[in-house]
Length: 110
Figure (tube, rainbow, N blue to C red):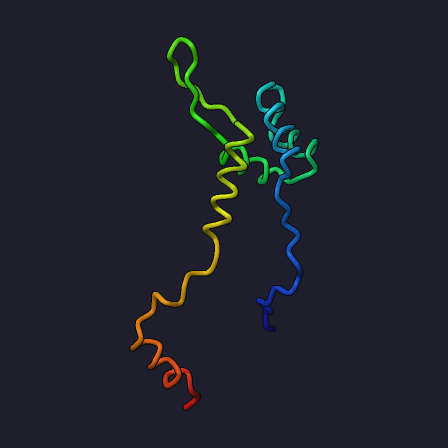
């Protein structure tokens, strides 16, 4: 019996829209929603909500000079955008000329 490790199904990941992030911010501020309830309201999975809350968590200072953490939608969107810009394939120029010259010889069937 062999196991097929090939994944041919199309992934259905969806990112939160700005409207969904704003709704999430309001739900997080109210403090009455659990993550699962937020996910149901937004129509996304609970891990998506968890990652977004973690991504957009910002340290704030209140008027008594006490720090607290709060989710801010704009911060989450900014961090998401930065992560997407850094998730591209790395430049092939980082490889040395000697490596690129030896590559065809080593890849040829023997």
